[in-house]
Amino acid sequence: MPLIKVQTSVSNPEKSQVESMLKVLSAKLAKHTGKPESYVMTAFEAGVPMTFAGTTEPVCYIEIKSVGTMKPEQTKAMSQDFCQEINQFLNIPKNRIYLEFSDAQGSMWGWNSTTFG
Image (cartoon, rainbow, N blue to C red):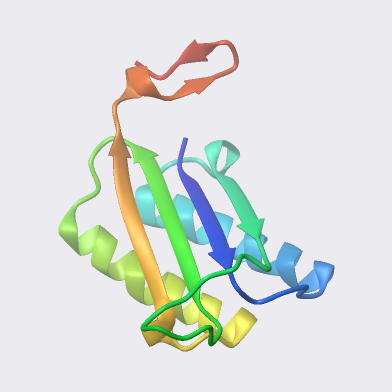
């Protein structure tokens, strides 16, 4: 049910680096949301043509979605944590990373032929 999707202009990072990053992000998202990691999904898309502040320097966009309500203190902590991880794994400056947090109603999130609401 929690999802973290990372899109970046960085092209072709090593597969092992991406897998390691996704595992770290998965565990951290489970911890931040208090949801079991068995429900967490991660996604990564590299080489996306992107600009930020009018330049094509390395940039990253992260979507974080979860069923329920994320509180402001949670989203602030996640922003700090995930910006740090992306900076370390992909060497993207923190000021070139945008994050979008979205709460979803259980009835609007499907899994295993049903929904969470």
